[in-house]
Amino acid sequence: MSLDSETREMILDTLRRYAEDRLTNEYLLELDHKDEFPREVLNELYDPMQLGLHLLFIPEQYDGLGGGAYDIYRVSELMAAIDLGIATGVLATFLGSDPIRVGATEEQKARWFNRLAQESLLMAYGATEPQAGSDLAAMTTRAVPVEENGAVTGYRISGRKQWISNGGVADLYTILALTDAGPTWFVVERGADGFAAGKAEDKHGIRASNTAALFLEEVYVPAEQMVGDAEGQGLQQAQAVFGYTRLMVGTFGLGAGWDALKKAIRYSHERVQAGDTLDNKQGYTHKLIVPNAARLEAARAYIEWVAERLDSGENGLQTEGAVAKYMGTEAGNKAAEDAIQALGGYGYTREYMVEKIKRDVRITTIYEGTSEIMEWTIARDRWGEHLRSRGGYYFDWAERLEAKHQVEPQNGAGVAALALRALAVILERCRLDRLTRNQHILFRLGELIACAETAALFAERVLSHPTEAIALDQATRQALARIYAREAALKVATDGLRWTIGAGQSDPELANKLNLSAIYASQAGLIEDMNYARDRLNEAFR
Ligand SMILES: Cc1cc2nc3c(=O)[nH]c(=O)nc-3n(C[C@H](O)[C@H](O)[C@H](O)COP(=O)(O)OP(=O)(O)OC[C@H]3O[C@@H](n4cnc5c(N)ncnc54)[C@H](O)[C@@H]3O)c2cc1C
Image 1: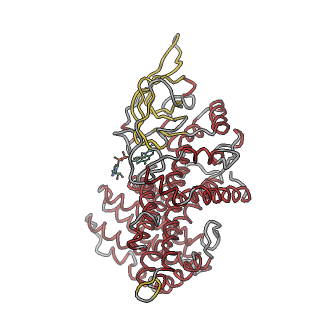
Image 2: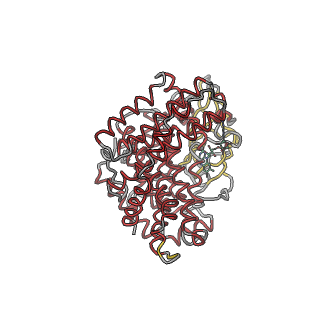
Image 3: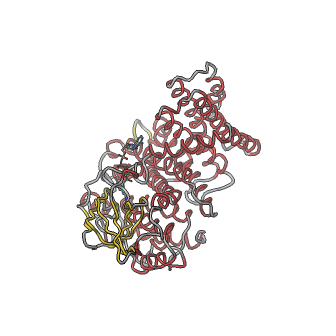
């Protein structure tokens, strides 16, 4: 399921041109400064005569375009590079319609998707509550059945939702509320009696997005607006789309991070210090530019892999979605932070945009599941794989990579295999010494797993799956894959050693088993690869 490449390119081009004309830096800075939600921009983006962006999320049989995960990735990356606040307004409609996509009856899908497509409605997704964020099970919003002659004809919903994107501006809301059978989604229309939104939150970033609390006081919702035909399916329905939604937010990190990095690269061509431009100074490029490009492209390789799998019909992929989100958003956040440093004093002022991008991208490590919740999700799942495979999960993957390295020696596959082997050793040591009883160890494993898997995927795919999404040639991306594989192998081994020793591991030979000497030896050629990547990045983003 995805668009043909011509249609996708047409959408991307139209969006690019729209942004060039309409969403100038001056305008975006003004929205940010005034903390203003640009309703008319969202209307234009959703207008089928202009862009009809929301149609991408709507299946074809309901008058949508039926875009797939790959299309959503490409459009989301571009939107995030334009403005993450506006992108969040679009994301909220996508999120809001998700419970319908996965849980609604055919009749309900026809009703709501047709309206969404034809009326270009803005949606909001109401799950979080003041005391129930990462732990949605703590929610208290209730839906009490209303009965007539022994049959349930509707529900009265009471409670409060917190931090809802589009909360104050949406036309239609999906609201998660507790029934006797458990959390259940309901479609609530703007203006329903007893339903009100709070004032727009005054936020650190994405100030062009509207975020508001929702108040529900005995809001009556007809029974046919309960999503699906049974109560209590809400959390499973929310889970079912995490593969998609987390991929989308991971892509936001990628788009915003690259936008900041490109600004830093361009700035470094002009800025002269100590007799030369900054783009010629290793202390600058090899710290602030090249490692960020490597991390962002590693995240892209993983994102593209997940998108292809989703589009080929695989279900779930919640763990892979979590890795994509975690790596894309952390890489984006770090790239934007370093871009401020790269512009020095100018970076710290508003005019150069990187300061705004940094504030904007910060949200991506929080919403749609925080980075810590991603670490936990990844660790929990892969820990299970490690146990089920009796330690073979990552050893087998390492073997496949080593075979790949024999035929494609330029992609860092041999070094990524060292990362996977070290990871397998660390996991096994954690099992034998029961170290995951420390929550911190489990979460750190989540980080190391994400890091090693991303290096492995980047090395595996860099040659066989060239990307259309960025103007970097194969040789440059191969150099970035080698740089990233070295970083990942060193991190897995040294952080893994640190935390297992810190938690009281019992094997005096552990350092040797991690093959630290080979991992250090694999750093040979690093500076040369960084020089090469710097030169190509300087050429690509003039
Ligand atoms: C701008 C914005 C827009 C948003 N849009 C929406 C929206 O449209 N719809 C919606 O439903 N929600 C939305 N959210 C809510 C968002 O998804 C939550 O803020 C997020 O899930 C975190 O929940 P919380 O804020 O309650 O933080 P908490 O869950 O209280 O977390 C606080 C900190 O504790 C950590 N933590 C939490 N649990 C654990 C644990 N078990 N172990 C270790 N550490 C833990 C977290 O990682 C975090 O660092 C939005 C939030 C913001 C700020």
